[in-house]
Length: 82
Image (cartoon, rainbow, N blue to C red; front, side, top):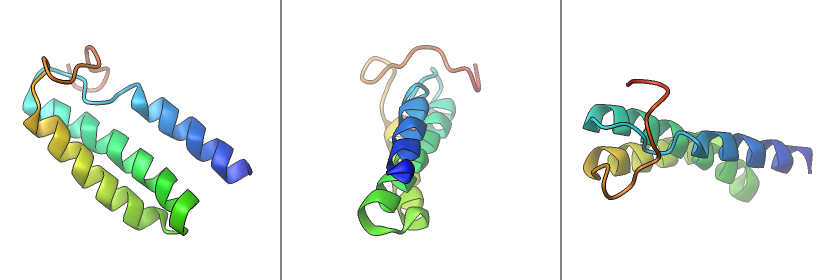
């Protein structure tokens, strides 16, 4: 239960950075970070393989951040690269 709670809190914290920023590179960076965090949490919870989940989630998040515009998905200004 503790692993689930920690994973859920980590995923919620990472969601605060979801695809924010205005440049495609910044959006890819933040999208990849949130995807990796969420993927690792789900990988641990569902299959016991957080590394595979982080790799898949990071790739999906980076692609989503890079190929969407701020008008499609906007989490506000990035605290990382603005």
